[in-house]
Structures are given as C-alpha cells and as structure tokens.
Length: 129
Image 1 (cartoon, rainbow, N blue to C red):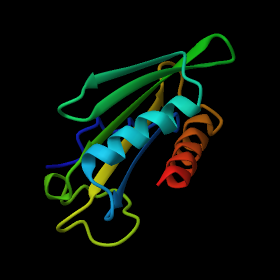
Image 2 (image 1 turned 45 degrees about the vertical axis):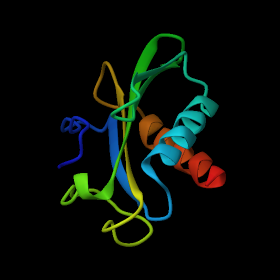
Image 3 (image 1 turned 60 degrees about the vertical axis):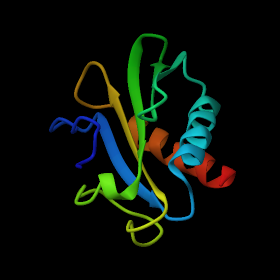
C-alpha cells in the first residue's frame, strides 16, 4: 500500500513525510504519536479511526489561518514503495511506519511553518520512544 495520506499539492505550504520505526508496534507507535501531536498544542485533536490508527488535528496560525495535520500508522508490509523518507532501517518484518501530512488550508506559502511542525513532531515522538 502507498502512503495513505493525500499527496501535497505543488505549493510550499504542505509537508508530507513517512518514517519507519523498526522496534515499535503499530499500536504503541500510534499511541505515542497521538501524545506527541497533542504536545504541539492543536486547537482540535480527533482520533478518526482507532482501528486504522489515524488521527487528525487542526492548528491555528496567527489567529486567522488554520493548518490541518493528519497522522497514520501502518505495519511496514502495508507501506512498501511509499517513495517517502525512511529512518531506522528496513521496513520488512516487525515495526511500524508513521505517515504525517501538515498543510495550510489557504495560500501558497507558509514561510516554513508546516515543515517546522513536522520536524517538531518527530523530535517529540523520538523523545517518547
């Protein structure tokens, strides 16, 4: 299966990344990902589908703009050939793959806000694992 999150448009106001976590179960990684996302201070945080391990969040930027963040966790066998970045070794066998997408709802440039948010998310997630 490909990355389950929608691709980014051809504008710089979106960041999409996948990383492999060979030592984590999908369930444990999903739980830690929810907590790491909550640490970033979204105005809304909702688990869309516990069975499919998906969570969505909304962040407010400059009190006017809203950014949407989606996280999905899948077993490695479901995400072969994602074409996205991978950290931590092979995705075969045990482990889990985390996909994140952060995108502005309006405009074409976000001055790097979404890229920084994804970076901070992974920093918080790595600290929890």
